[in-house]
Length: 461
Image (cartoon, rainbow, N blue to C red; front, side):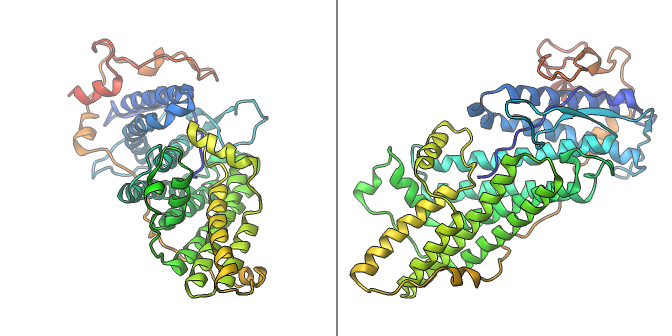
């Protein structure tokens, strides 16, 4: 948890070949430059080993943040909108065509997903912002993996890690929501998964479900206790027993049910998209199960704290039913995934929640058998009468970034004749995006200088 998205890659694209501007002639060329940088960064990220990708996410994010304002400025100009109060005239010479590699479409095992050609600037915007949202989700994932480091994080470190991951997921939610309601449907007849409004709405619900569970995880001491007990490098448990503070059990249970509702919405919308990657659907279903199981656990904690140990145990039994599987060999496999830092969390936390429930179940059964024997009621009626979920995160809309006034003013200068289309030298116009052409260079720049660096430093732009 969260889902391990694969970042898409793309073919080269020259905005200068499709558009021109009389008021800001350098705009298409500069936008092309930053897109070329992004394209190369995505290609290099794809070729990294899985263990190294997390540390490279900031590089991908920086390339996206550099490119998106130019991309959205092109879109605003084509729509006839003023930008920072300034008129930007942009003429479309011919319809734009671009290829992106779909990563959500179900493919034959062992075969890479195809690159699909789309038309129009909306298609380019949709894939670019979708990629940005996936990067935020992967950053949240990388943060949460540090909870399982060899050295157990302190309470303060744990809270900081979870808060940072939550921030990333809420940013992803805002982007997916924006795409679902604005430019996601690039073509009424489109079958490209990433560009469908219902796909983006489903991903938005998924991100919100994951962020809601993190609201609970931040103050949930039990997963940390289980992780500490299983950490071979941790010896604190030999000195003192871990302190388990009281939790807002009923609030957390309602929040978990809210997460389950969001996950259920995500599952329905993503399944309706058709041809979606089965791994994603399975993950969303697992997340819904985990959320409902957590709710059962917190209702159980609330009951046990009130002296109703038998009812508390019944809630735990119901939670195990919600999870719907037993540990056995899967436990060892998940531990290995965490150690490698690869596909960890593909079960959306089901196994981790089962460990917590079994820890409490063993403790409470022992108490119930030796101290205050109570009958354990059936769990099904308890689950059938669970209340509705509760929202815990205020969501904010995505605010499309704009170019600064001074940068936009530089776009009024004409490009030099020597600075012809920077992507003309990138002869990878075929579907093969594996050929690395290295950094994009500008005529007259120092060897090894990137185009992005040059444009930042060159007052001409």
